[in-house]
Length: 104
Image 1 (cartoon, one colour):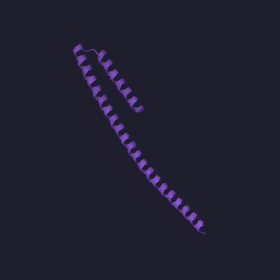
Image 2 (image 1 turned 60 degrees about the horizontal axis):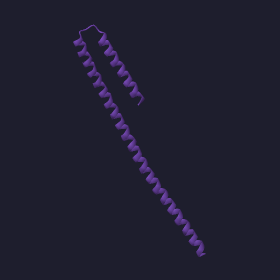
Image 3 (image 1 turned 120 degrees about the horizontal axis):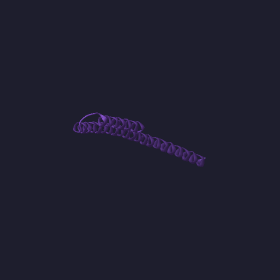
Image 4 (image 1 turned 135 degrees about the horizontal axis):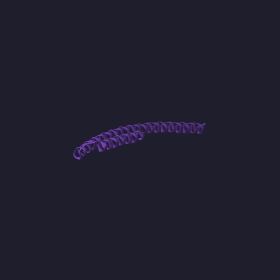
């Protein structure tokens, strides 16, 4: 997200520079207003595009984290089942040994 802030700062700087350049350029007021509106539209379009890219990246990260979490849960379930079976086998073995010792 740090790169997003840097990118937003760069875009804001470019927009501010373009705006100031238009304001101080020797031109008629009507032409200057048209240029400002045009540059504002360009800036808004660029910002919208960057925001959509950011959202797409966040969606990709969310999907990746979700998939990893699901894999971790499945792995944990499998390990739990294995441990449960091992414990059950050990208990059955001990019970069998105790039963043999009591029969002798």
